[in-house]
Amino acid sequence: MRKLILATLLLLAPTALLASGGGPALQHADIDLRDQASLQRGAKYFMNYCTGCHSLQYMRYNRLAKDLGIDEIALRQNLLFGDAKPGDLITKSMTDDDALKWFGVVPPDLTLVTRWRSSDWVYTYLKSFYLDDTRPYGVNNVLFPLVGMPHVLGDLQGRQEAVMQPPHEPGGEPTIKGLKLVEEGGLSPKEYDTMVRDITNFLTYAGEPFQLERERLGRYVLLFLGFLFILAYLLKKEFWKDVH
Ligand code: HEC
Image (cartoon, rainbow, N blue to C red):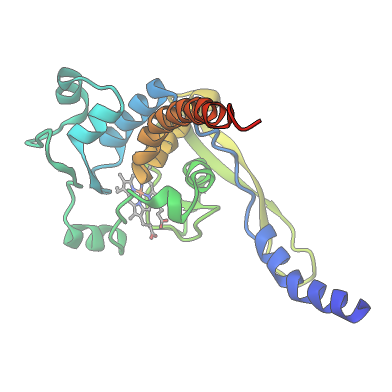
């Protein structure tokens, strides 16, 4: 028996290690898909700061507007650029060839990014750019070493520097202990956090737009089940009335 327990523990050990993850800690994004104002702001930021390079190719503008309670006028004023029409898919303005030339990679479509990375990852990623002279755009990212993306929100967040920790053992590599704001941006750290959370909130919605619908539907389903229960109960009483 003891052997069996030991074997199970040994089998589980690597999983536990994997689950705890060796990488940098993620910050909590505090996602709330019912916060419509946050989703609307996030959509606006995304269209302004991200669609130059990233698409949301499974999402149409008018679907998004309907889900987030944005009317046609606001949609045209705030979210549609160039000759984009409400029924269009959200594409990026840059061609893949140009992207390859400038960044060495094609920026990925972000419709599902919060599902393959997690919302906390995206939130932390947007807060983890730091100055690094060795990189083509002068920045690196704690969560995504040697990242090809410039810090597009740098003027708002300000510039961060990495605070290094000496290697644990001699000959090892120094590691990043944390980040320090060395040049202020247009937003206070708190305002920047809110902005990044709004963008992450919006991207979480984009990854699973049906989630909003599901909650609404869920309420009707519960109501229906409630009615059914009462009906079934009354029927049962009616059927058994004469038996006793
Ligand atoms: C100037 C072009 C550009 C803009 C603007 C831009 N990005 Fe990026 N982004 C990139 C490139 C290039 C990569 C790929 C990085 C790599 O693979 O090294 C990337 C990667 C990412 C990733 C990582 C995806 C993954 O899992 O591999 C996320 C998340 C992301 N961008 C979010 C955003 C958000 C949110 C915005 C708007 C605030 C934005 N980006 C604006 C160029 C851009």
